[in-house]
Image (tube, rainbow, N blue to C red):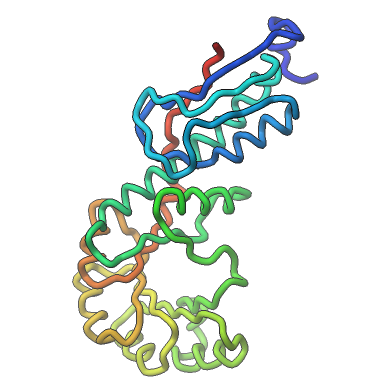
Length: 255
């Protein structure tokens, strides 16, 4: 039946120019997804953006305008805003983590802890916020985690991965300093230190002695991320920037 409300109260050919307005400051992402939403509803709708993904905006900033029939705009409004506000929320939270480690060599990375169906959009939003992407999928690189190590030691796991997938990045998760030493001996491309404290990361970095890049993951917050960066992490992966980012408040106001 379609949009019952708009069909009932909005004239069929009524024009509906509208504008996107930020109701809070943050970083914008998801503009292409919002544009495509309107196109799927009505190909005659025209969306013009005043900002690009990655732009920092203030509360009250006009982000773009939409031209088309009012009914079409109202049908697409909520889905377009859902995508735009969520992606902008991811970008905004990512930027806060990036800013928190400014002046260090650490880079903020995402994880595969994404919302179902939104991984590509969320990872693009992470990039818009100044972060970096980890694996898009299991086929992108080898990441040997604790469950993989349940039946074989670090050395065997790394050697088997190298033999099966030559040329691929091989990363190994380490939960203890003993495993860190094992990893150093066999030489994966990088080491993932999982659920360690900043003090433990400092010890692990000392064990490695610069032999391998270090990634830190597990419960990292805005309050602790700088301590991990200063402990020697080259990468800090944060699941929260995708699975728990609050939306950025954005409205679509008809003119």
